[in-house]
Structure formats: structure tokens, C-alpha cells
Amino acid sequence: MEITKHFFFNLSLLMIILFFSLIWVEKKQGKAISKFWLYLWFLALLASCLVFSYHKDNYIYLDLRSIPILIGGLYFGIGPLLCISVIVIRGFYGLDAGFLLNTLLYLSLAFFLWKLHPWFWAQSPRRRWLLTLMAGILLNILTIIFIEIVSPPENRLDAYFAYLVIPSMGLGMISYAVEFVSKNAQMRQELVQTEKLHAVEQMGAAISHEIRNPLTAAIGFVQLLQEHNLTPVKRQEYLSIIRGELESAERVIQDYLTFSKPTLDKIESIDVNRELQQVVKILKPTANKHSAKIITNLAVSSYVYGDRQKFHQCFINVIKNSIESMPHGGFILIETQTTESSISITIKDTGIGMSKEQVQRLGEPYYSTKGSKGTGLGMMVVYSIIRAMEGKIYVESEEGTGTLFRFVLPLRK
Image 1 (cartoon, helix red, strand yellow):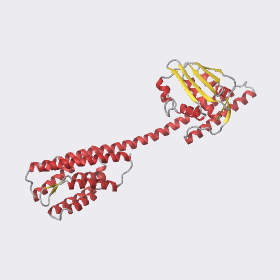
Image 2 (cartoon, rainbow, N blue to C red):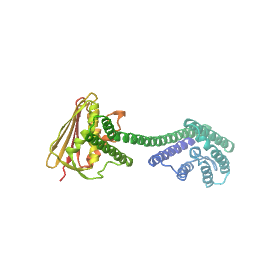
Image 3 (tube, rainbow, N blue to C red):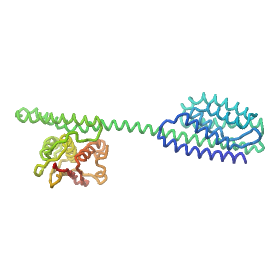
Image 4 (cartoon, one colour):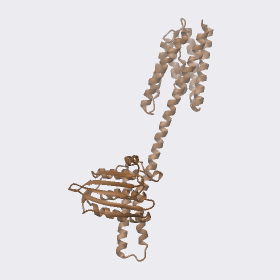
């Protein structure tokens, strides 16, 4: 069984080279591989087959050259190049009868692979695998016929087993590996495309979520403007609030068009108590709609540095979440406490609360405790704004009891 031993050794060598090639392809991470590099790789496979071929007699060399030629020709369209290469390499072993038979066989195969490659790739993966296997069996049968005509083997069982079983087994394994890698690359591309589409969808949902807050407030005050007994002073106050909220919505849209994390574009001195009262006034209609009562307990006026619009956006997001966490009504307590260097703003609700895992994940992009109704970008913006103001956020929550947010911001020096 000398031929079988050589073929098994040759197949093992091909599988080792294939293993390192798959690692290299994986590191390419879906990038296209040029025909030149493919040709060099298959040329190395061919060389390994010819170097370790079984020398039957003066001009017959038996090996597994059919495996790289069929795989390269059917899957990668470099069959003609490989066939010409194997003819040239075989020429170095002598221009004898074996060389002529080799030339006749592989010139015919070059034309066959050139014509078959486009049609081959139009087939399903399973059918491609079967076609590769059938082509290998047919090519090896033709090789056996040539050997029988030119130089019949002494041990036919050895020769037939080596040519009909081992190459077919090798072709099946390598073809399956190629299909597997190809499928993974395709799935990776589809996943990247899906992620891009998902990001676009999340972007649209985030814009909708962020501008809904000021628009909801504006709509509430527009309804109040429709009252007939409204005094001119109140009308002017409501119009001013509506204008401010619409300007806020415009700025939010501008922020998300650039999809950058919130930064303090405008640094100004902010009266914390005054701005919190303004936020409460904006959210009063929404709170009344949900039967929620907002209670404030604010310390003496304190000032911090930041962007007033983003300060509003931050606390509107948090308080609105607290309101929505109380579907059957409840209380929201807003307190402030000051020290020599910082101010602590506490927002406590009697809502449904959160689990420890939910609390830990707050602020992650696209993570929302509201399920399909939320985008997760509201809290991400809150965390980004507080970080930009050099502050910290502490969250305590228990399911069924409520949630407490504590914001610690440095005071203006």
C-alpha cells in the first residue's frame, strides 16, 4: 500500500496548509483577497503535491494535484493558470511520455474549468459541494485509465483505493471548509449591513424620542392658549415657553445630526433652583396627565457652570422617565443640598423601580428599561451631559418601590 501511504501523507500536508490559510483568511476579516495571492497559495499546494509525489517508474508520478486544481478552478476561477503551472512544473521532471499525458489531460481540464466556473458559482452550496466531488472522481478515473494504458500498476487495489477514495475524501473536506468560510464571510457582511440599518433606525427613533419632550410641552401650552379667559400676561408667558421649547427641539435635532456625544458648546452660569423650577413647569402638563405630583424642596440658590439647554434636556429626560414609571400615579420629590464645593440634586419617584442589572446598564447606548417603547439614548445623553459638567450620577432602585437619582455637580467658583 505504498501509493496509499504517500497519498495520506500528501493529504495531511494539504490539510495543514489549509488550516493556516483559514487563519490568514479569518484575520483578513472579510476583506477581498486578490487573485494573485490566491494563485500563490494554490501554487504552494501544487508544489507540495509534486514534491511528495509517488514515483512509480521512469515517467509516472502519482500525487493529489487534482485537489488544488479543482478547488482553485471551480471556486476561485484560477483553473487555467493552475493547469498551465502544473504542466510547467511537470516539465522539470522530464519531457517524456508522462509529461505528454499530463499536458493533454490538464490542457483539456483548463478549458473545462474556464467554461464551468461562472455556472458553478450560480449553484447552491450543497450542489457545488456535490459537483466538486463528482468532478474529482471523474478526473481520477481518467487518470487511472491513463495509468492502465501506459503503465499498469502492480497492486491495483493500492492504486485504485489511493486514487478513488483519498482524493475524493480530501476534495469533500476542503470543499466543505471553503463553503463554510464563504458562508461565514457572507453572514458577517449581512451582519454588518444589518447593524448599519439598525443604527439608522435607532438614530431616527432617538431623534423622535429626544424632540418629543419639548414638543409635548409646547403642545400642552398651545392647548392652554386656546382658553378664552386667558390674561394677556399668561398668554405672553405661554408663548415664550412654547418658543423656548421649539428652539430646544431644534438644537436637539442639530446635536443628533452630528451624532456626537453632548458637549458644552456654551459655558454659562446656571442658577440650579431657577432652572429646575423651569423644568418642573414644563413637565407639569405631562405629570398631570399621568396623575403624578411633583414636589420640590430646593435649598438656597446655587450656581454651576454648564450649557443651560443641555441642563434642561438632562433633567427633563430623568423626570419624564420618572413620570412614565408611575402608570397609576405617584409622587416625585426633587431636592437640592449644597456643600462648600458641590450641589446634590436628588430626584426620587414612587414608580416601578429597576433591578440591579438594569441599574448597572443605565447609560449604555440603545439600552432601555422601557422595552420596545424606548431607545436608550435618553439616559445616554443624561450621563454624557453630567460627565461634560464634571459631575457624577448615583442611582438607587428597588423593583416595586421606586428609583432615586442623585446628581452631584461642582459649584461655580
